[in-house]
Image (cartoon, rainbow, N blue to C red):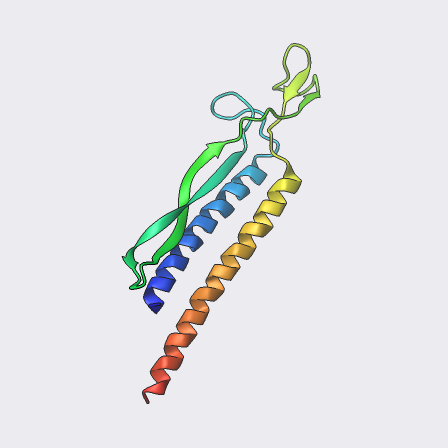
Length: 139
């Protein structure tokens, strides 16, 4: 496999994981947002990935695939309703609609995305080291 195409594949994965990290950070930042621009409680965002066929194909007929962000969707599950009549966003019954963000789930997702990002980054570093060692052979 060509080193450059390997790095291209990893670049797609790095971009996808960066988007995932950004969305998880946005979810964590809005765990207490009871009123957004639309006047409703924040709804958790979820990133979906899809494979992306690379332009270059190997001679054996195998194609190179990378990953990219397919879409960012909103989780439609309802958030918890709590009784807090003093809250500015409380309804007539004193109930407040909270965001559907579970901080524990978001932290697990954050760690998973972070580890995947690190793994892809180490692939780039190893490819770079292999290229450098290859250049040293010719000296």
